[in-house]
Amino acid sequence: MSRPGSHQSISGIRASSVSAKPPNPIAHPGEDIADPVRPRQILDYVLARRSVLEQIKHDALLREQVCDADPYLIRAAKNHGETTERTCPMCTKSELVHVNYTFGDDLGYLSGRVKSSTELKSMAYEYGHFRVYVVEACTSCGWNHLHMSYVLGDGSPRTPPREPRDVLK
Ligand SMILES: [Zn+2]
Image 1: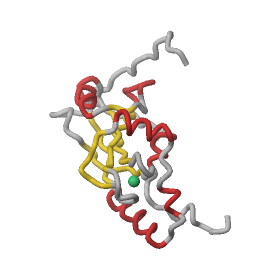
Image 2: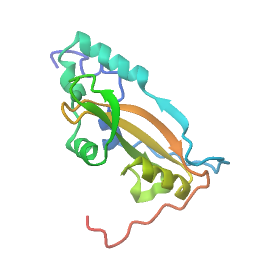
Image 3: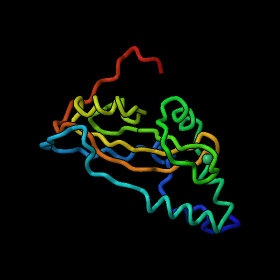
Image 4: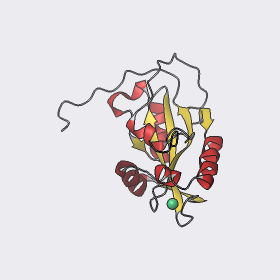
């Protein structure tokens, strides 16, 4: 690498790490949850995002690295993305869309799927505990970053659904 540390200096949380490498599921004990659809254990990535945007100001070469949305994310953003009122910080042309990825032990083979906000609400009653990662993406320039993540579910652990045997691989 001719620019030592240029890769490592991105301190933001890359959206591609969500879609490519799901976090290790952690078994969760049963919880008493009053409202399954109310987000809990909320993490926001505002500071990480700001830090990435700051770094880009000082290093134009980093731009390519942050506008690296993979084809799956762009496709998900086009087909299932939920529009926001916020303009892309990189190209300032398009409005950002949010894509919700869902992960959790309770989801079994369905873990990692993209879900709409409406689907998330019904899932909150079908499962005990799963984490939603909201990725913001720009379908024009490929900017992507984690926006926030949170946990939904009614608190009662479920047996993960079994993958149907006739699913075509
Ligand atoms: Zn953009």
